Image (cartoon, rainbow over all chains, first blue to last red; front, side, top):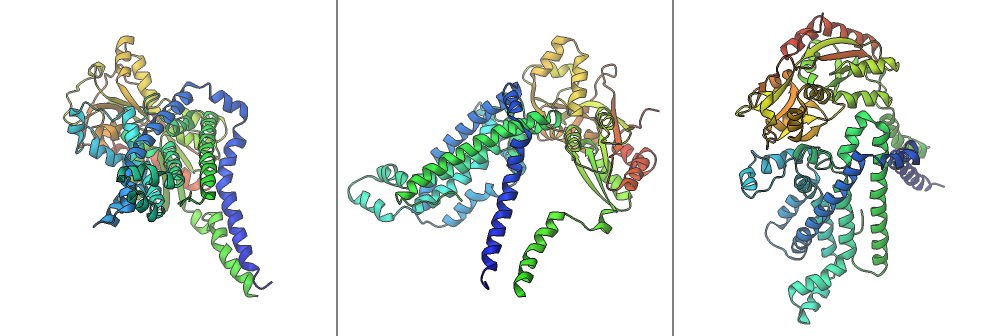
Length: 270
Length: 251
């Protein structure tokens, strides 16, 4: 009896947390009936926004994986002067408010920004273009992947990597054939987090790329615009976004759980 | 007996944060104002002349009206058009609406821009920004373009690259050099004089821009709300509006 209070506090805290975190999500589905949900899928603006979100987040994710995986591997497997500082720099966008990220991107790559001239000379247009949305997504989402990937590579048993090299595999082959498969669950978890962050991105996109249907107006931007004019449509589009995100999260959870049982080193979903 | 005390201590902060500022003595003096983004400077200056504390929430008028429709209860709602306060009044969500100021729709261009007239906006390869449909400044822009010959309006519309959620987003894009020009109010130009220059719109095409304000029904602080509206029509608020570049309401 004398020790019962602490478990009770733990249970109360969990109940409170779960209720608080799920109620707004549940409310979206309770307020938007299935009929309204289907109606919203016939709406041009919603369809364009969902399609654009899917395209831009996929491309952003591909870029993040391509550059972030080797970068994270280097951070995880080598020690060099200033590694902690580099890690901190890479994680910085995590704590930068999205609108600030947008202003920073404009100041760097905008027409009158630091590299604006170079970007223009290269014939690339970012502001008001879909490419600008992708740049904003990569900026805000990549730390979620790199952080997770770094932890996943760090958790790979170094003797495996050593054995692979002793057996004559090149470093590139070791990376591709040993390190990546061993770290795969952690990498997948990082992908899911980065994808989710990119899918929900709002502030940096609005400030840097703008908001135009079919070009730069992703689903979150369309939701805010619809909120002013058509609350039901905003609700319905929100429901679709929640469903897509939840499906992704669930898929990755299942995938990583399967891998964990097989005992691979995992820095699982937080 | 110690155990329930501990539990209570743990739960007190949760309960307090749950009630969100339940201190009655404090609430009576705080005035919550939902106002169009274009009113930011004018209302903040006006607020300094008022006794008591104000909490301003500046955003696109359409967004603020939607919040009220969803049950938000500020004390005062000030919109960059008269339509939204009138609609909300008809629905019983706010008391009667009064027109308290006028403004002018103008073109904002960067200080060194070569754009000199509305017609210049139809040139190809310009980047224009406007506000989304439903945002008052976006609706005024549509009204203006509707008065132009179709081909000219289409050419201008083809240059629009972004539809912002409020007028500050429009002027921000122009001030940053991201866009060549945008449709804003003349008071916004006054607020960011250095980077941005005003190009007027021919008077015969100018839409009539009038601002409506209303006390919200069942406002938590109705006396404060009425005083805020009264002194906006005559007194410190009216002066702050003039200083910020607004025009007096139609007589």
